[in-house]
Length: 250
Image (cartoon, rainbow, N blue to C red; front, side, top):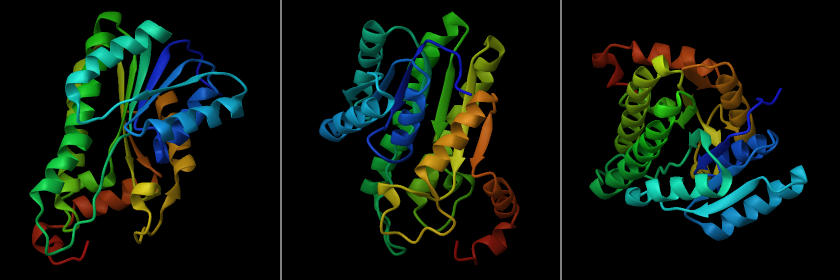
């Protein structure tokens, strides 16, 4: 059943993939949904498609470059002025450029940290500043199972997601006593434009991921693996001794 709420929701990174799938599901909750992404033309097409599907104007597109952290507060304020108080934030934006095993690209690493980690921090902090005085609100951050351990594939991506995950945990530990929930979603492989062309075993659809994430939100879960089997898989991986783990091709 949809949540009974009238507050506005923000989805950062909604032009495709999990963010787009979340926006579609959130639109059925009969409240304003502000969707943000860098590609405005694609975002406007997503908004039109979803609004047509639900038969009402509930999706509102806003152009935003996640690396522009200085613009976050002004945009948050603009969304609330146009659609009412925000009571829910979903941060889904992320990048994962291809990195060869013999490549150590500081520029790509910096980009991943800027978007995946610092971008998340900026939006989560902006939401927390507003939710705390109101003693209400829900923050959902989409990280990745890649942040659970330092695997040899894409060190920068693993580190960026681990940083995002830890920041979300810290914010959760600050806010839970004030009635504000923070949910960390850790997907395994998902079929999205970011993973297109890659070998992604056990991948699920973005729609499946969105369904699981919103179910966890409704239940007030702190951490959810998407799908649940990744909790068991990552438990095993986290507990492999380092001297063995570094010999594995994972």
